[in-house]
Image 1: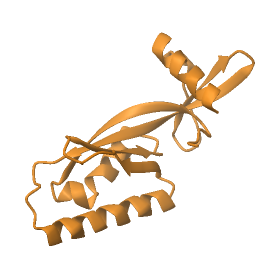
Image 2: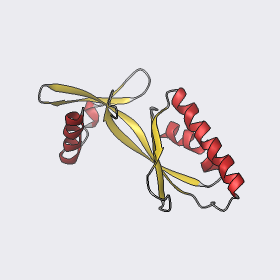
Image 3: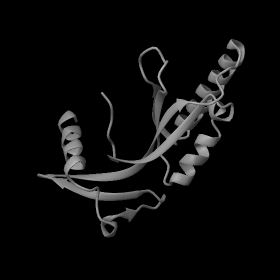
Length: 144
C-alpha cells in the first residue's frame, strides 16, 4: 500500500485529477473516476477533508471547554459509526498553533460535509472553525 500511496501522490503532483467527462457518479452520489498506473487500475473517489482550526471563541472556563470537547468527540464517534467520517484526529505538538486537527468525511457533496461541520458542538461554541476541501483518494485506501 505504501507504493500505491507514492504512485497516487506522484500522479496528483504531475497530473490533474481527471477531465469532467471521465467523472462518474455512483448510486450514492459519490464522484469517482478510474486511474491506471502500470497494470493497476484505481477507482478514485472524492471525499472531503476538513482542517480544524482555532475558532474565535476560546475563552470558555476549563469546565465548559471540557464539556465542549466531550460533545465534539461524541459527535465525531457518531459520524464514524454512521459511516460519514473515515478518520479524524488532532495534530501533535502543544496545540498552540492555529491548525488543530483533520477530519475526512465520507459524504457525496460539499454541502453535506458543510452541514456536518456546522453541527459539531465545538464549531457551534466557536472553539473551532473548519475549512473543508474536496480530496481524492483510491477507494479502499487505509492507514497502517
